[in-house]
Length: 358
Image 1 (cartoon, rainbow, N blue to C red):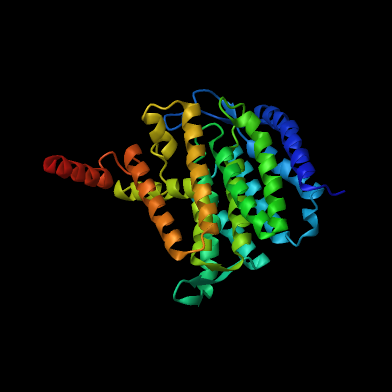
Image 2: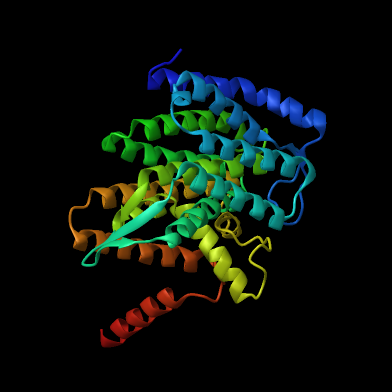
């Protein structure tokens, strides 16, 4: 039996509310708990595997929404593999290299199994540019990159779940106005499952989503955003999902830069992600999460404005403004280094010159 989207949302949301307490009990029963250490913010043992509750609620939504009618075999197979990877990692712990290889395998399933590939891009003044084999590489990098980006911001109660819900909701708005019903349905199912789980995951959390959840959400966001870019993109339509995913992409990019500057391996964990830096500035746990939600809303609003912009100049001005805002946040929080402040130093010099003239 299939239901309208409002009913689908309600059924999946309630399913997540019912399933999550069972997963909390199960995780405690089998001993899948997260231990506090010097790199983590929490100070007590807490159950993991919360992502399994999101997955089971999505399975409910898959059937009540009629998504099972769609040709999604490769996407579903990839979803099952990525959830299985997360469960095993939460229970036993896996090396970063092994997880990375499996993620590449999952991305290949999507690319070669479903044909979900960006074949060409249209640039202003240059027209259509065929990507050829590079299109396959670009698509695989997108899936693996976004999957890991969500995993990297999973450091505070409700952070990954809330940001993912905002990201997916924005994609849903674009799908609604673009008449892409399948994408909209996938978004409704996913967001309902996330919000139902978030009731138990927001500060103070009763359960963590674990790698099961962060990998699942990253995979969903990567695939759903790709469905909106299928086969061809313009320069700005490609920038739109990047902007929607501003917080995880932004945090991941500067984590790579930070580790390169400090001559550390890219996979080396640290306590310098954006949520760590905001905590270091004196913000409380709940306030930090809400601030990052606000950042995510700002990126999403900018993406919606960009998608509706009818002029190249307007789009360019908006992108430049966002880049300057990002640079200010990086310098203010010390995301690369507490000594890295070129923009603030430049503004300071201008002020001093103005004061001397005055």
